[in-house]
Image 1 (tube, rainbow, N blue to C red):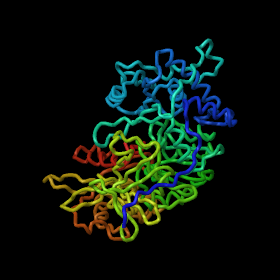
Image 2: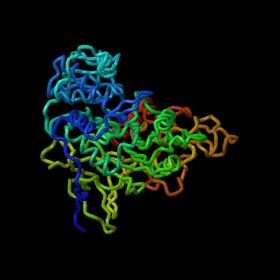
Image 3: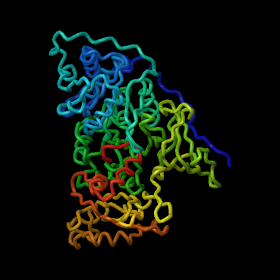
Image 4: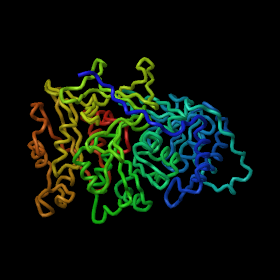
Length: 554
């Protein structure tokens, strides 16, 4: 068999942004008659496309009055909301480069990113000013143009003209999750934002003005930026914004109240949503036409439960900070559950071996290796790679051209001289009725020998009595014996998971049901393991290595 580089066929897309994206979007809304249509839904407030662009123009006067000019870096440490959107567009209008960071990061992380990006100004909410020592700081409450009606602005300076730029002019910076050291800055351009909409919003999701989107992933992440910023502003549709971290109850409320049609989330959030469902819960999602999953691997069993709850297909996709958004995806027209779908138009994918050679198809027409990607929005930082990015993801290309995601290249662990995939062990344990969440990592024991340990969040806290198979940790029902840690540990060590578990590799295992989670809320095996202080902090690092850091992977 010959080596194959798989690429989606070239497809025509909308006009590339060849001018300032803020000015382009304002003109687009006016030209297509979207100015009076809802753009963002925040709390009980509806912001129209026209209002958003008006606020952004006015907001630009504030940093401009403080000396921010084209090419300057403006760090945004803001929660999701209209202030985030308007501040980003204001920076774009000035030709400045927005630096998008999580406002919940530590002071050390914020200082590192401000210094690394050479920020000329930092914009944040109250309580974060001391995170940006030495950087001119602007409080979000000092931007009345973002929320006040025009009549309250008095004799404010006129909005500056949009800075002339090209499609290649830097627009914003996002940081990678830093799984191999300090986070790295990735610079995307004005032209990239239109490509996210044209190639994913249109060709994958068929987004139109009638759609209402809600993204669990926040705006400062690549996934959330496309979902809740690029897609609505380029399509004339609307997006729901919330500053809170969405748990199941909030997701229910926002989807039902705003009649959300496109739900974007991550597997850990979908798992919580399914686990917490109750009578009438499914009715909350009657308006949803498609759900999207990204950020980490979606176990097939979980995917089936999500489809059952939502009543619509779950479209799995993969992307990265360096690509800006998805580069391989299932679409509303072509969905293969259990796979990542096919390459997004204009992106090329290759599978390579450890030496960097392209992997040839096997006798069955499939191939497996490390996933490399090249495309119009991919930032590599290495000219010698010819535009190709090593994603560090393992992938398998099936004979029909779809891709599967076995895990990260660095997910493989050497235990007892045998190479083991912790993800395979997790998938087996996840099928046990008493397991709500599980993460497996290689941790040295007291003798220094590496052993796999499973960190388990039971569906009910050990010792609790819980409801039965409808969503509980007690397979014998509410009147059965209480679930206790010793029994759960012994049961998991023998659990066949409906098939032959990976223990056939004869690697040493230790089962640790460490995390106790309440029925409500978001306990994470990852965060609990990080706090254990016994070497299990390695689990958190491996979990982050699976892909872009999400709200549910802290």
